[in-house]
Image 1 (cartoon, rainbow, N blue to C red):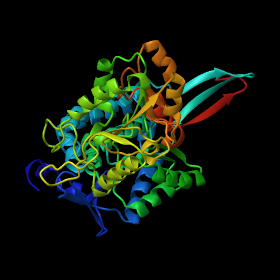
Image 2 (cartoon, one colour):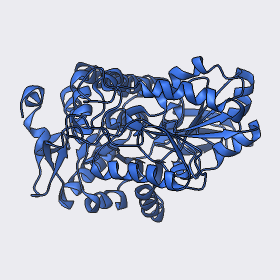
Image 3 (tube, rainbow, N blue to C red):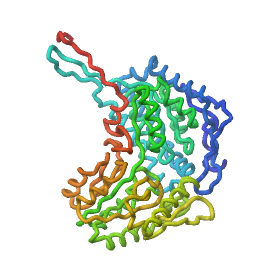
Image 4 (cartoon, helix red, strand yellow):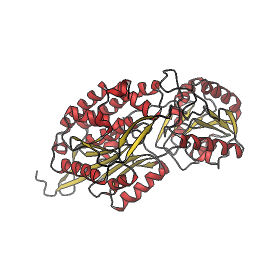
Length: 488
């Protein structure tokens, strides 16, 4: 290693964080982190043996059953969470660099979004102090105390694409609720979780409250199947999420799943395209389309199709494709060769089924290395093809036209997913349309990434919600204590 990577503590690359200590991995199995932009090895990290996962589960269980964290006053948890946010804020430049180095996200984007991770944590820290964990209500014979209690040991399983922001949403809610946690980071981007572990250690969290373990599929299965793990919160693919759901449901564990998306942006007939474009430019293929909330389907009124496509193509065609470390880059590489080939397969299959490429649709060479695909817009897309129905996870936008608003709503909802969407047009009409879109989050004339509201999906996009008070409730169990004689 050289440069800024040489400043990272060596235990990030040989240890796990368990019970307040850095424990060297015992297994010889390691995972190489490959740069999507250079195809070179950035670093390698150990993968846990089953025994190390058992240690992490036991530490979290012990911290929950006999440690101080669940028993602290909410304001005391809040104070320590704010200290953690302060420490993460001190490391925001490192967080941005880790994001770019591991998964190829443009540094311009990671520098902009990395500070928002502490915003998420501070939101939950404030919520911990204000949340009503205990209320009273009258009953026929007396009254009852309704108590919201931490659910227990929680497994937080994060994806590779936005590891730190997503982890802060999960961890913030779990800590606010009073849970203890085992973080299982994606092997493609594990260093973000190690940074969190270091910050947790530095600010003095009680041992076992936060544990970080890296693992392959077999050892990860041990984690989600453990009866000592009360809650599993997973963000990732539908295939993996479905497998986790079957295991957790089999033991009646609690579960939150945030899976894929196939978001539609509906442009109503009166849309002011110049006002809509800043949002579409930012959210139609952010991070080369590798975010689940990418507005990858654009629904246009047929009477304005050519006009709108021309504007959209000119703006997206101006995106700068290049090295993610270049501050002017807007579109970097996709994660790896497998994803590169997968995206091109969707494009080629779409063309075979009658779709027309408006722009892009092919590989872009950047210094002869990496896995780059030109920003791609396709029209005349058959709605029954994989291109139209499945999550591509690449810099690809499909154009669909409609005659009536009812048809636009039907097209938007004609998917197995329901994570997010947007509607652009006169605010009153746009709100009426947004109410009919079957998705967990719909923006009207814009989009906002905020921890203050619930995020999650309908249908195959998942189960449960993250963010807002709803996100904290996902880590709580409800108990009623009744006083039928009315005596306190």
